[in-house]
Amino acid sequence: MNLEGRVAALERRIAALEAVRPPKSDGTVPSGENWAIERISADFAEADIVNGGVMLAGSGHLPAGDRYGWQMDFSTDDLLLDDADSAAECLAALGSPVRLRLLRAVLSGRRTAAELAELDGVGTSGQIYHHLRQLAAVGWLQTAGRGRFEVPPNRVVPLLVALASAQR
Image 1 (tube, rainbow, N blue to C red):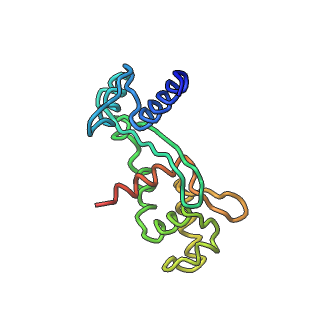
Image 2 (tube, helix red, strand yellow; image 1 turned 135 degrees about the horizontal axis):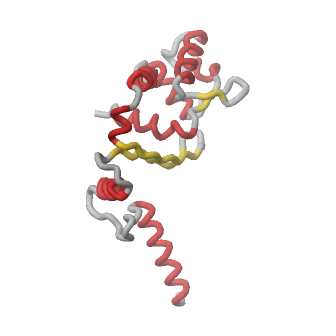
Image 3 (cartoon, rainbow, N blue to C red; image 1 turned 90 degrees about the vertical axis):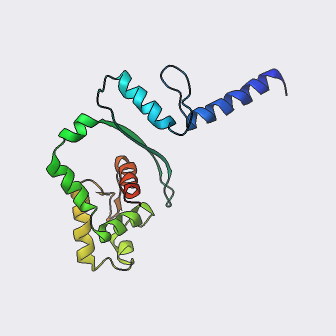
C-alpha cells in the first residue's frame, strides 16, 4: 500500500476512534472508564454552567428499521427549577405497564391500533385509544397519518433513557 493509502486508512481508524470517544474542546481524547463524564464536565465548565448538568444522547436503529439520533443537554439548575406539574404528568404517562407495552410495540414497528390490539393484556380497542391519547397528550406519541402512531424522533432517546433508568 502506498503512503497515500496508508494515511487514508489511518484517518479512517482515527475517525472511528473519535466517534467512540469524541475529542475534548482542547483536542485531546478522554481516556479511562469515565471518559463521558470527563467530556461533559469539561463542556459544562466551558459553557459556564456552574452546577453541571445532564446530557442525553443516543443513536441507532429501531427493530422496525427506523434510524434515530438525538442529543440534548440540560443544566442541573434548569432541571431543578422546571415545572414539576408538567414533569409529573409526563412521567405518570409512563407509569402504566400497558402504556409502556404500547410504546415498546410502537418502537418495534406496530403502528396502528389494530396491530396494538393484537398484544396480550392491553385491553379493548377503547382502552387502547385511551392510553394512546394519554401518551400523545404529553408528547410520547404522535399520529403519523391514517391511524398510525409513532414516537416522535426527538422522544426516542428520552424514552429509551427512561426505560434504561428503570433497570435495576
